Image 1 (cartoon, rainbow, N blue to C red):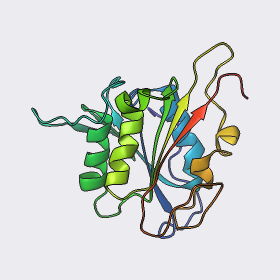
Image 2 (cartoon, rainbow, N blue to C red):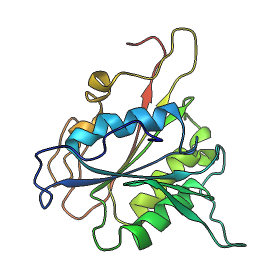
Image 3 (tube, rainbow, N blue to C red):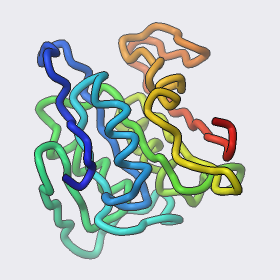
Image 4 (cartoon, one colour):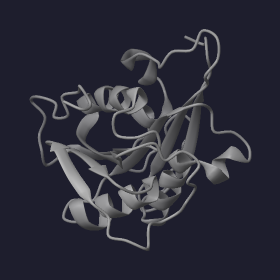
Length: 193
């Protein structure tokens, strides 16, 4: 399995299950993406749609000069030969059009997205696109420095995406009124864990 993650939790009611779309800009085979998929699988139905290769610093760009190719790697796990913004559009407007995601999660980016970086980041831009499509969205980035490692599943669950209630309640400072999309970014410092 590309993600090494079981994407369907056992014993959950499919109708009531939260639909989670995951993407990134580091590519479909990145360690951060696999970790994120594993961490979120117990919370709902996870679908991964990510670039087939590194797409860092592509910003909020779309591919307009050629057809995009979507490849199913396994159940609920897809690669796209385009940008993270392309991935979000293909996922929301085509692949998942019958059952729109409840939340979009992008990352975990290899390196922090801070300051001006957010305007270049494909990881953050994916959340911009999700928000434009009316989907609450959050991006994760990991500082790369001495002592860094991608956080373990149990530690990641303390962060906002796990506590973000997509049904409209205010949880841990993230406020989403019913029907209003939000966009948030969480930075994971090196050595914090």
